[in-house]
Length: 349
Length: 65
Image (cartoon, rainbow over all chains, first blue to last red):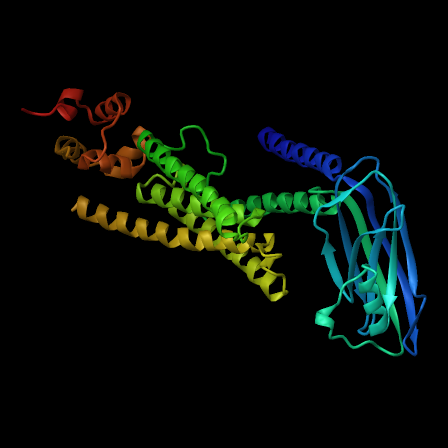
């Protein structure tokens, strides 16, 4: 009981520490600002034509990023989001009907900045905005503006240091990790109830001397696979300009490949399963984790979440990758168990 | 080289590979690998096996000329 309490307390402390770190590293200059308005369009003229956003001050020169999210309840109105500096020069803009945009890193000087939303109701206004450098053509210039109508526009935006993530994003990641831990604990409990033995704590003496040697060899090959893979990914970008794997998901691809190498060698050398585990436990855990991740991955695709964003693999494909890893490991493991049982029967005869 | 002496000593006690493995605290595959000659155990493991099978190190692990 005391052991369980210590574990729960450790997890809570880790989560609290991560929450603290995320607040410290969020790098937000201006937290999420949300604004809403109703725009009335009559004979192609919007009222109001603009909506003033928040001002913000940068204390020092540096690289910053702007997040913008615009939601429009019906088609026919384009919203332009513009950030001006003190001199009235445009430092950032984005134009769209419904959009979620994170700017690339902007080099901004220490100064005061203003934000503004402009509601575009006809081709001429859009053309003028583009000419002034405050907007861009939307949907290849092919767009049907509504002559009349009422539009509810919701906007959300924030300014942060380049590379820093939104506090909600970081909290979301922490909640995801915490949820994952709870899910694994639940799976272990179910597996044990079904008669399976699993050992996630890596108890002392979990592997015998032959297994430890074999696992050492497996770690070596997995380590070199990861290293070579990372070099290949970097070279692909440097030489061929292929950026597909230059993201966290790209790192996950290599982690999954090196884990597959580690698991394959361990399984083939009968060093995967510890002395505190049994085949039933491993098979139940692998099946559950694999299926769960594949289901989430397919769910993401069905929901229309892109697997590739801005030319790089999106973090959305992480679940699919982990699912595929387990789909690969499971048959290798079962195949080895069947082979071992056959061998044992022959040996005993 | 196969360790037939160990296999026969185990069989003489009517002990399966799994039973021996459980008693010395290793996996069945490790006992199998030792009997097949695929793995050379450490002296500690050799001693544990000898004690359990009631044999000396020489009797089980010393190669005959």
